[in-house]
Amino acid sequence: MQIIENSKIKEKLYIEKLSNGLTVMVLPKKTRKKYIVWSANVGSIDNKFYAPGEEELTVLPDGIAHYLEHKLFEQKNGTNSLDILTSIGVEANAYTTNDHTAYLYECTDNFDEALDEFMDYVQNPYFTDENIEKERGIIEQEIMMYGDYPEWSIYMNAMKCMYKDNEINIDVAGTKETISKIDKDKLYKLYNSFYRPENMIIVLSGDFIPEEIIEKIKQRIKLKSIKGETKRIYNKEQDNVNQKFIEKEMNISMPSVLIAYKDTDLTSNKVKKYIAIDILGTLIIGKSSRLFKELYESGKIFSTPTVSYEFSKTFAHILIEVQTNFVHDVINGIDEQIQFLKDNGLDNESFERAKKKVYGDMVKDYNDVSNIATGIVTDYFREINSFDYFEEFNSLNKEYVEKVLQDLFIEDKKVISVIKPINEKKE
Image (cartoon, rainbow, N blue to C red; front, side, top):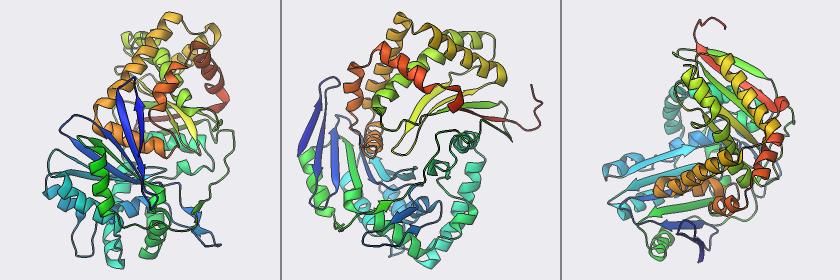
């Protein structure tokens, strides 16, 4: 067993790779709550691949990873594992992202009893024509529901503006048309190609003794290692953005703006870049920034905008989202603030204050077992150790953050997605 210790936050991560290739990680916390997540490295972008030992390219419908997530709970004996886990008092769930699918539960009691059901259903898919057809209507409703969410619409529109061919612009749930092509053979193909122990990770956080819980997992593992590799095929993406601006009307009371910058450098240190952008977000339009105070005091914004950096092996971008009735004024204000910081550099005092805030937020994340476990999973599939954020933080200086500002906040790589109320007059 490998043990990684981070002295800055006084946490230890216990890692063991089982004989079948499955990685198990445990981060003990003295808390009543226990949390487990089992994740496969397959998501919405993984619908073109060569299965192990096959020379013919497999192309599956958009939304199939999400569809599989829904169906994995249904068991051969007619029970639904989600219902069983709920009935014994644990909070169970699952989710699909662009690059991984995760199954999880958290509880304060009955962890071992729940573990039996949890380990069983993830390893025993049961797909029939009948149960797949039954789910189709449910997922169609979910697709319609997502389409009504302003937060999702503004995000997907921004992705389609930034990326012409990258699979990130595929909706995780797919469309009514694409899911109509999903059948049991396609689901089994996806499961057998990606739900392999060497392509999966189990992460636990809570009141665990690492050696004991890993032994319990070993006793319940049935998945066997498979020879050969599942070779993923991704589209080649252009450096330029696809289009600069998109606007959509929805049934909302206040417009939302999403400004995004496409990062085409996928080889540099993304952890360090992530921290730098977090600091820059605080300086550009964080609660203590000059711009936020001006916009807030003039009644042009009422809540703190969010600034984030999303990245994986195939894409990276910065997102700045804000709600406002003064769309053009806010966009211009953000542009001017970015240009001011580019021209004048970062103020030492403001930089140090922003850096302390970002560090405090990072430490705070380790107070919650669900944040810990899901964060470790997300980073693992990016080939990152979550403790790296603290290690890189020490090497971060003002000059590096200023370079990120100059290199990434580029007008040619910027797109704007706006959602506005129906029939709103243009400013």
